[in-house]
Length: 158
Image (cartoon, rainbow, N blue to C red):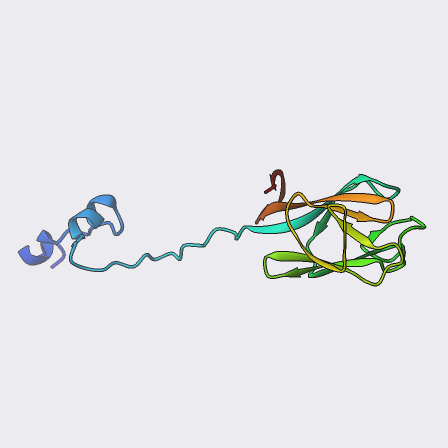
């Protein structure tokens, strides 16, 4: 039979589009727990980094971001912060990140390391501290780094 009609039970079932707004709201049951089908990605973490901003001296005037766990400062040329100053020892001081803090250590330099005019052997740095190494003066700052990189305008001073 080529002209046969489907029976009444099959004719009453209409195909429904899956995932339409009407379909979802009609099937919603507030007593059930629903799970999203796509994982929600967390935002990129933000983190603070130390920044040495040169104010006076014979070194570079470019700010140095302290992203590494430890940064050595001295006259030696292969250091991240190399200062061509006769008053600076070859390996003068180091800044080390310990958790969320930065600690400045003098490495037995000849002329000493100063924070806010006070000679130090070791000192926890705070935003706004003045660091003197030889004839160079730096201001220590904290900058906020997001997933897209460092943001210059988000310098935090206490």
